[in-house]
Length: 472
Image 1 (cartoon, rainbow, N blue to C red):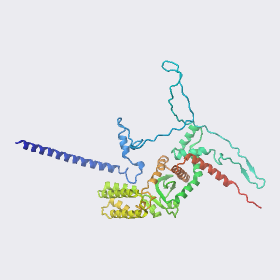
Image 2: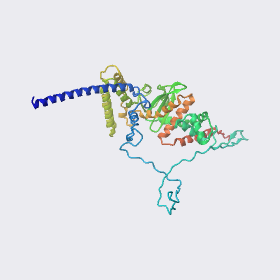
Image 3: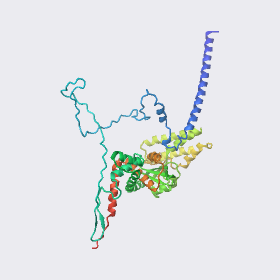
Image 4: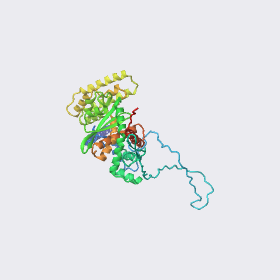
């Protein structure tokens, strides 16, 4: 056998080895695909399109937990863990001006005892500290009362710092409400906090009554928020379940750029937005696919985040869903890119017509029964409401604003379990609405709570003053 024959034989052996290796890798790849599909199906319950974000298992959590044991790994700065994202400039906390300057000196060397002549310089360190909690101030108001000799009217003198009911002042009421609805403390813990910090002895029931007083004082401002939302051009609306005395109820949220209103109702029907927004509401509602919304209004924007998640979920269950999911994703990305430019209303209307034809072409596809057919049915059912954001610049394509507004109430729901009665529903919706709106507007919730309590006292006293008509 010649050397050329030997080289050909070697090449054939190498080719055969490579072919066997490729077949083995293909088998391993197929096995991994099947394993991945099985695991994704197992996680689908947690990653479904309608699953709240609080119940989802994110990849970042898995990666951070799996890498927590790696001592040599550098801390991530890309958002997986707290810290500055890669490429972002650092933000330094501004140092306050000192209220007091203390000169810290030393007379002698701690090693040999030699006396120092003078300082070589100063090494400043700015320390911020809060003062010790102040003890309770107990003030007795001797409110004198009088009887008018002319008309017989009895009058009790009032003082701006003396409430007309109860024995707790404005600060206690505001802090109790804030501890409950901003710090998420149970009422017994609120009572413990007052006792530990200020020596104020009150019960959990007293903390509840103080919180209820804050809600009653802020109810007029709650109604003002409702009137502002009723006049808005665009409102994000969503709802989530909540218990009332163990029975099913619903917490609704209505959110604009500057106002957020919550409403606890036993209904999940269209009567709730009709009640809150008014039967003649003329604005656009951004919402998910719940049937209550089209039953109330025809001016809707359906949430694209929901439909894209549902399309991805359907693509994982049926292979016919993959091109549909890809087409929806590409259409949404193309619309977002087009809308970044300063389009005229006429150009927006034309873009809206083109996009609608794209959705209609998806609906016309023939697919077997299953998740993909259900998905196409949803697209067809909301065909008039998917592209409102293209024609109206103020409308967002997703309902993320309303979903974000429900996060705080959902967390507190897990802590409290259930609202007990109508009074609890009243307090819950009122204080959540006030705190969320003040946060949107950059206002201090503690100062605002004190303000509404004081204002309510003044209004109550003004209403109590009798009006004497002149007989002249």
